[in-house]
Length: 236
Image (cartoon, rainbow, N blue to C red; front, side, top):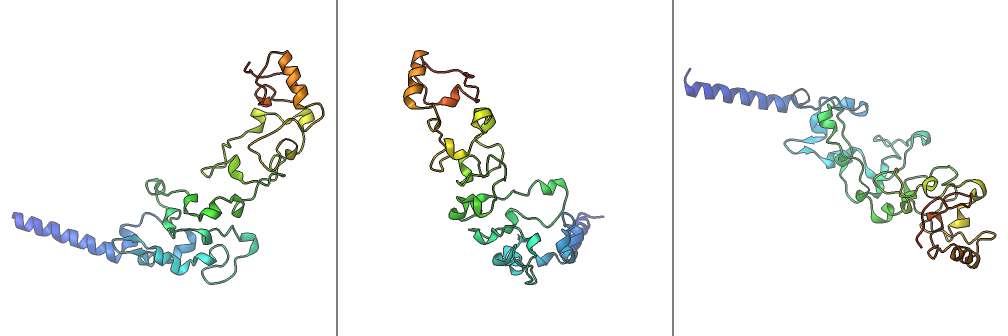
């Protein structure tokens, strides 16, 4: 077989493969089966993809209208209240569906490319107001908190929080009280111990000076429980 014949054979095979990619893309290049909701599109790759350009956002929003996501189905039917989730897609600054979604339940090689939701895609006003999408936990620590979550939490993850009460000041014994007792004006980034019984600035100052302690603005640096005994170091 001559060199020309070999090149012709290789070229022919490549053309056949290329043709098969366009004719049967779901068999040739699909990264995995589609999610159940899109199973009917399994053989119609171009319902979402544009040839040689990947997924088209315009094709996504032709079925999933942003104003209806989480509220109505693609057929225009209202989503049942018990199945309804927070409708935050309406507050996105940019329409970039593939930044968070993939319809293919493919192998790990594909799955690891999926990116988590980015708060940066939200409008600034919504991004700064966590309660637009999130409901605070109903535990004792959060039940009376009305300020923005970002005083303690970040948008990267709920945990770890920047503040852990049990580590910095244990709410035990006489200190099982409402948040506003120590945190005034809804400012949970600061606290005061001078709102109760004998805790007055003058008395605290006198007692600490007797002990040779001159820096006592940060009470929980030494007192981390209701026992009253110093549990940490102090600066003289």
